[in-house]
Image (cartoon, rainbow, N blue to C red; front, side):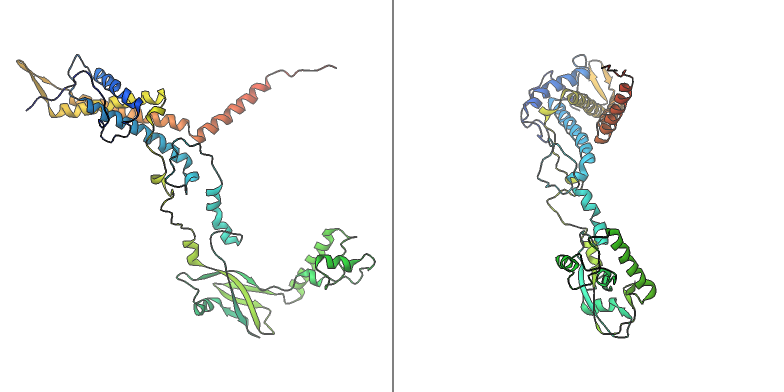
Length: 382
């Protein structure tokens, strides 16, 4: 078996030396690549012992360490901002973007309530009408939808029925109201010229008119056969029994629209964490704290690679004897160091998340207020 290649003692980085070439043109990466190789080799025992790795092994570990750092960093950025960037163009690189939360995703999530309340939303309202037959109370709106071809796969849902008596305002009559305050002219200005001239706009407070209107509506409910209806499973029963034939209008939605209206196909927009527009980090922009983490993670990767190499060459022949290699120790140490570094980075990112920073700021404000309470108040004597 051929002897394994060993670290020659120096390296010279060139474009194309890494497996993916993510950072090969970055001058800071080019400069640090040779330094990191030398750092890792010395930490692995060179020149006191041979290191069975080549420069491209260290370069590959260095590239992986930078990428891992970026992955962990932007995973936390996505977690903090996914609700805000959802719907953003996937072609927008936001590595260096300052992201301000906005209400668009909240409004989008709340559109379903607007649809149900009839005040907006993403479900279209349709208008229909049925023929009201004299003496007939019950009407099957499901049958109407089927015969009209608008029921769809899931049917329709009636949202509003326009079956109401005239508003109380048009039946407001006060025989004791005087005529000396120009009521008719005032009515004309409100468009009520053809109605009773009894509302006291000038002399009486507005709450008086409101109470009279409520009294009229309560009178209709208790003393008269009030205009009302029951709607159960799109079966309509109207009260009182119609005395004349005509048409009755209503608003409805197609239940299919409730499903399709909540889904928007956006192939070029952010829809999940996998297409959030974060790219690999720019190595030159990583500060000294981040670079130190990258150096240590590179060493752990190099230690792991060296362990696998020494696992293949269990013993190395030397003059008159053989040397037993420490494959198991290297892999065990490398695994522990990698896990420790990942946990340390995630803990640091947790402490700097938007939630954690806001909580810390709130605590600082509270502590500052407590401290200010201990400051003596100045008494001015004038």
